[in-house]
Image 1 (cartoon, rainbow, N blue to C red):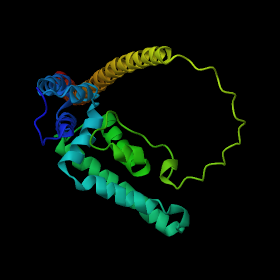
Image 2: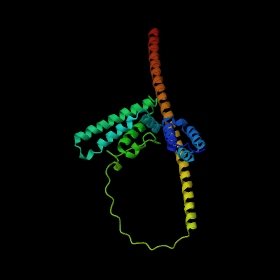
Image 3: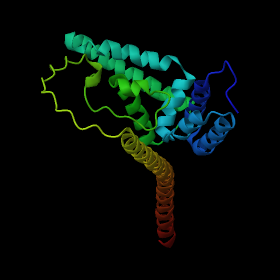
Image 4: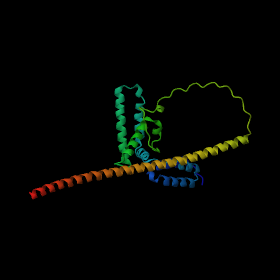
Length: 268
């Protein structure tokens, strides 16, 4: 079935991306397949292939994505602060300290907001740290900022200020003058086409294999993230039970001492 006249195929892809990266990642794989099937049934095989290539986000990446979808101002607020930090080399020490403090406040505020939006009032420490690191990286790294809303994994920025890519780049060095190469013998057009098709097929196979490997890696990362979250929850519960056991032990020892003292008095 062909695309109805007047519709835009990319809308189907955009809607799928918005839905998949805002919804709980636990349902990502199943819902992605449903959207792929719908696109194929609509005659949009190219769009279906693009949807199939979308990667499942980790839990921390999803928390940031959901925040961006829930509050469209997030990206602009991060971008505005990044623009101010862009002028860091020309600032005095006082202004740098002010912007550094503003950066910390904004990241902390958005981290809390992201966890609230995702209904995670008491998240594992590792997840909170990854959300904070990703929001901080979005200020420093334009590539991270450009992918807000469709992040696949948490991001980290270990440098200071903005990423090198955010600063104006130097002019490229002048090209070297090269001697004209001697013309090679003409190759039959059919043979060139055959070799080109072989290379295309090899490249497509490599892309498919890389996609499968990325899917497997993302699934493994998600599983490990879930495992860490569960273990942290179990550890917190175990610590509470340990504290209660210690209180009960202290009370029992106190009762034992009082009973022993009372017994001693009665025997006198």
